[in-house]
Image 1 (cartoon, rainbow, N blue to C red):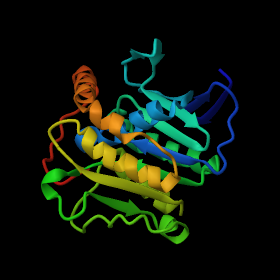
Image 2 (cartoon, rainbow, N blue to C red; image 1 turned 90 degrees about the vertical axis):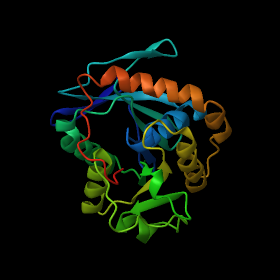
Image 3 (cartoon, rainbow, N blue to C red; image 1 turned 30 degrees about the horizontal axis):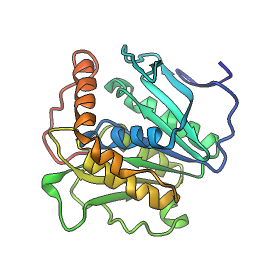
Length: 246
């Protein structure tokens, strides 16, 4: 393994030295509709991004699988030119959400990333005239053009790793935006994920084929449900809330 960056008990391990200055960091988690994970996974596959590294924690989820004939890690890092994706195959255990996300934020700032684009999901039952909402840090609004995505309505809440990352980026005056398409709460929703991918295409001037995502919607849903089922006994805790959360 080439290089290693250690932030207390979280390690960022890379196959070779990397220069991330000016790059955009993409990240999405296993929230409503699995929008974050589906969109990140599709971007990685469609761009044919290279797996450049891994994130290791003290309580790494005890699951692996095989993709493209190689072992997958719970938290992987991919890169295509100036687009860098943190892909969480499994979500970190709940007790690690705080320190894990804070370390990602610290690392991305230290490595001089230009901005961060995060993806979550909103309960489709709340959908209005827009198919997506967003949350912006003040630094993003100061430095970036309008994305034409309305700000999340007051009274709705974001929870989990995405909420922590937005907090820490705001505290550090770092440009970050979270895209929140409306999604089905009860199942993986590739259609909602495609809404986020289309907006990322626009923001980064890249071309990720959304049609492929829609064409493979049923296959993707089954694969995600299998991952959820595999991790549920030890790593995924049942949500006590049934409210309006990402």
